Image 1 (cartoon, rainbow, N blue to C red):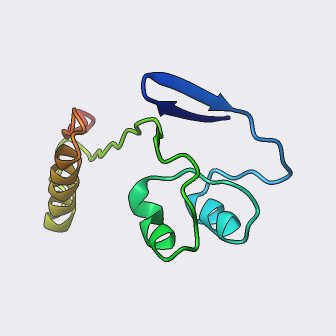
Image 2: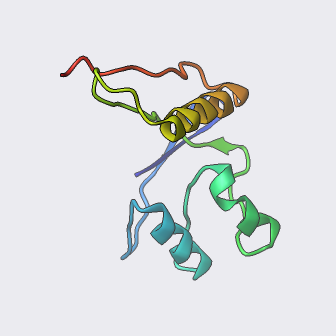
Amino acid sequence: LLRFRVGRREVVVRPRGRISTSASYAGRSLALAGAGIFGAPDFALRADVEAGRLVRLFPEAQLPPISLYVAWPGRMEPPARTRAFIELVKVRLAARGRAGARTARSSAA
């Protein structure tokens, strides 16, 4: 099922076809090959849309929000590169108005 929002209304579409995937790279490749429609975040398909390789079918529709979790053992600090990535994601999500951008540490030893 494909779920998205148009205004306050949730729209559910049951596609009929022979091919289905939950892998973003495969969905993009199939859409580029003309095998059907594909839903993904704007940033993932922006270059293809701007280049005319893909067309937005429902520009007013919004995909449901996703959750992103980062976890590490409670006694270990993640490496500096990992901490920098976490902070970058938090800043980007906050800039897009995504509530709840935070990190949590596992209490497991």
